Length: 566
Ligand code: ARG
Image 1 (cartoon, rainbow, N blue to C red):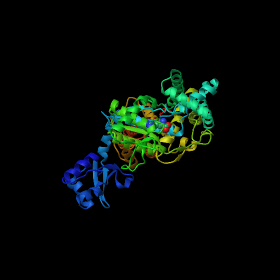
Image 2: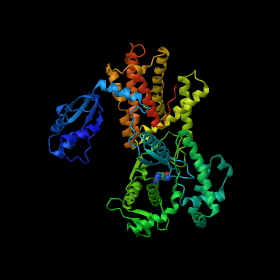
Image 3: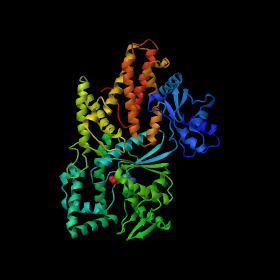
Image 4: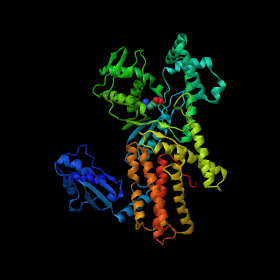
């Protein structure tokens, strides 16, 4: 419908300049204003110096309407409300049903996006920021892949830097081999902290740590081997979490991968006349962008996070020619990305660069380690989620065998944790609570998984009671008001997937799915299904089947499984 509006505005106002004006048609938030609305007449009116209502009237002149729309009216200062035609809607739903992709197009075909997410630091536990990045980044990954993009998921590990001098020294002096075997990341962290504290009060220790770092940077075989060990041990631990969350990366290129390219970045900045000396450091001034100056080489000659990100984006642009690079991190890195993007632009990188940031989430007591405020024991959180989900499953499906109960509880528990994260506006501060995450009657994964299982079972009952019949053989007919409402929600699915991906907001998809499940539930309670007369029954089972498929696909795009039974 947006395409119709764009063409129509140009046709009826050929002189108009609509650059930068949003000519979209969007679903209405409130059904009493029709099914879709276009609010562009006001902005267009300014460009063409006509009253907005006049613009709206021209758009609709001679009975012009988008496909599938029965009527349209102009409201208030110039809002245009569209009402779908029921018969056309039914045909559209039938087409969605016949399509394995349920009507979702592939606008990303031929385009590449690089998704830089999760990206924890070696020898340290993942903190809540990395976990949210993992869950949100993975949903964006799935959404983009589904829309046809070639996605390169790259885990940009923090695997290089001055901390390795301190860690190597700590490892040489304080290692507890048993502790390392039991919990590698915890032991590496302990070694780091112990060595770091010592370096603060002991000058000789600090110098030794520096010497270890220099040796590592110069490629000393022993230190390199140690560093590799740290990386492997940490990655092994991270992998456990990724496996449980069903997260897969195409690349694991940590910061170290770009090490050799850092001096080249500095040379290029100098050659372009972008960098200057300031108090011994090399900086890029970003006055034009209204940003603080950006350090690209520290006064001790070392490179920093920005230098590495510059080298990384240059390398990515050359190797993959992506249409966009999307970075997912917590809100504390906003300034870093603004500065780094500004410098990259000036260096001639024209790839679209996007920073998707989110607020930090507050977690239940006890998932925080005591010493470091927001370091969470994710494994424990997931264990607890599965245990709590198991209690729910045992209650709802006492007859299910034990192994199956556990398998369902895994899907429900992990789903609950992911959904609690994804369903929030990423940029708001949220508190995680078990009650909300596992609520069977609220906006949660278990609620949607349960709804899906129940809806899908209608299909099975139909097959049982009407063997030899195929519900797809009868056309979809929309008669009851609640049936029409459900149909109108279903048909929005492809647009929601597109908007959620392109706005980088998985929560838009969550809202949609929750809303759909609620409307379905009213539908299910209000109209007869299997007891309805021939053909009406089939039409309703078709809506039911479509609802189940949309829920299943929608949840899959969020990385959430839908067990057949709960
Ligand atoms: N390792 C970083 C951190 O823990 C996140 C990296 C994000 N990606 C990037 N290209 N800067 O803060």
